[in-house]
Length: 108
Length: 241
Image 1: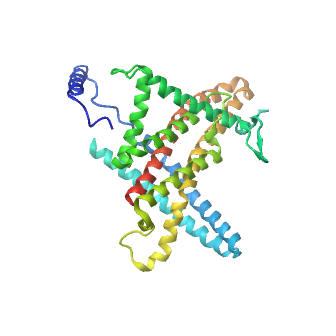
Image 2: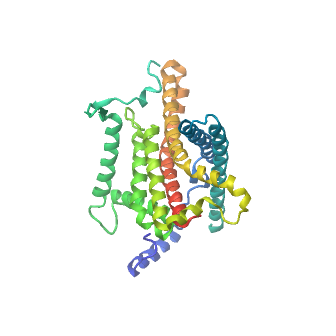
Image 3: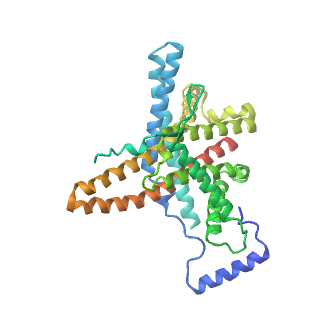
């Protein structure tokens, strides 16, 4: 947020900083976080997504069944819909992580 | 050993309060939440008090956390996300301090309770939904019907999309709660082996030290993941995919 609006004073500071960094042979800019640290154990995160899908679907189905007195039809239907929704969420999660990793590689 | 690894998650009232049949006691969980809020407030207020051009250590810490969250909001939500920055910052700091304070021996980790994380998650998803409706009106429902998909798969696809939306608070809260709870149980279990194994206790001791380091990383990472996912949901509601 503060990156865009730098006055000349700051620019002067930036130039000096860059010169000093090259003199001291320091890497330019801020250190990049390693890819794996980005989303923290993608496997676990995706697993949570899958499990949450099944739990959420089953709970919603059970609730609707209790309300409409149609046990166990909606429970079964929502169990499978929930599992599908969990897979969809997991897929989106993986796609997001992959896209981000690719973007990082390009920008490097 | 005699202490169960689950004992650390017990909630006891410190100041029993009962209003109209509801138990609203001030518990150890509430105490640590209050401590976290107080610490964040004190850090930001005290750290930024000089507003100096070249920041001192505390001011650098405050600026670092500000820029970290600002960059996160900027890169995931974009320009429109700027007005939601205070919300994301509060969320991030509250979760981060909850996770980090929980690593102090004898303290209480409020983020290891599903009630706490679920209430936060449901608050996030509800407010994001309201923001979506305010911004797009009824057009927000097009979020559940992916563009360019044949009409005969809609009856199957729309319920799945709606469910995947409703599941968000569950996955968001379970992620944080499971990570914190599992980590603390693991630490306590391995720490329990140290005395039990006598002279060979150095092996679990080394492991406990390593795990403590890992837990610090996870404490930060989970706060980051919680905040970044909130940002992504916000972005979804603002831009509708």
